[in-house]
Length: 617
Image 1 (spheres, rainbow, N blue to C red):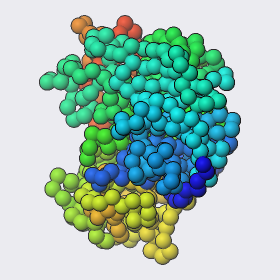
Image 2: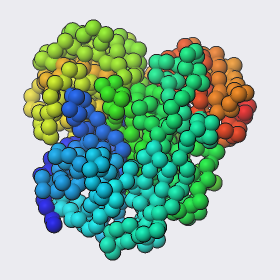
Image 3: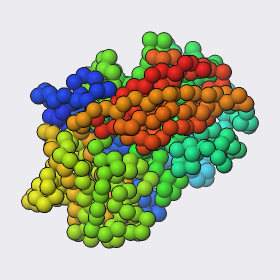
Image 4: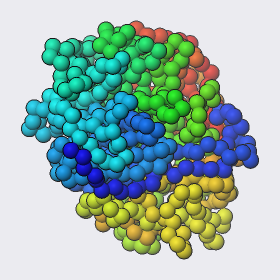
């Protein structure tokens, strides 16, 4: 059965061209260069995302596969189909035809939950999880030409929670487990049915919090506006939801990953176990988790897929958490994955919601994927045409996706203005729209787009429109059309400006003109902060998965990176704190019995300064 879908175009993740970069090192202030840098993007990804019936955008549980030179993206509750891209930057939506939807979806909209997607040399395969539990089986779909939208049924498997399909040495395996033990069974690739008796358990279910190897599996509240300094200190009662298994193979080493502690926290992460084969046995590793993104503008890096791009670079596309309109309000992020000389897997999430370079070849040995543009907008003064109660203009400059400014209406003419305080070099902006009082689901059409104008000024009186390569700009007047809520613009040339202004022209779904944050990025013109000092880490005697960290704040910092790992040169984990006056943090994210090395780095709008390392403990 071959059916051709409707195809909708959504150009996302605008790429940047000629700009000011750091001169080779991301830890110092930038120097200008005439050479055109690589394309850039910024997390969360600027996709159009699916619309909830509650009137907000969301998506989660992504999978990207590379097939015949093109990338395909599938995700929970996203578009009623999937997306295709040639470069991981601009995506085209492909919508499942109505005739296909009973096979690929658990609802009449064509959306689905937690898909298993993988490719061999001839086909892309798609297996969904059935949330309705109405059926004991789900079809296995495949396509030799997914860009055309033609799919056929090739088999049938029993319903599983959070399935993941993995090909290895001419064999096919399905991993599964949602709040249960992780298991795997083998698939007969002729009939695409389960081989009887092939299932085995890879790790046990957790029934007692004391049995957890990693404290990160309990992480809940540290940076959620309820820092663990009192009522929440060490008080964990809910078992983690261990879910979303994923398998990666490299150099004959097998990396079994699963998401924990649950998707309703920015501590949602992917841990990793290692083994000698696709079925184990698998062992916990001291350097876990493999993917942790805590703090910053948007946190969480769990329920992920690891894939390789056309140049052999590894990436992790992952779930990021918002959790305001609903605990399951989420977005997608893309982060580089690396392996050290000993084969340890880690994901580079430090400052991972700042602009990153998209490599046009193998990454090589570059110290950081970041473009070297720092946040120039944090804490800056904003004013607006109007504001709702509890949604003041300055909330558009607080580097927090969980707060936002909202105008009183979504009418044309509402505006927000930001004063950067002095003439500032800006290479890119990310405009993060919020869904305020959206009353209807706009559906997959242009009615879901946001029309606005971005203006710049040196004096707050004379204004000019800003644009960027690939931007959808209406003829005359500089009005932009954004399909997604995280519109990212990287400019051809560095812009020098003091004031930024956003003007509303129309909002989708009857919503008001609202911004989570207007983020301006540039190299800065001053000095990086002085280092944080008197850094001390104390592991808790009653539970060494917990530690309290203290330091003397830097007088020039906008925030801090708490770096830790199994050695001074293996600081794979990073917790990002907003606000330069912070000087203490208690975390519950460590592995039992593992000695850690530590460092506190200070950052501001001009760069990052490494702190002195702390003795391992």
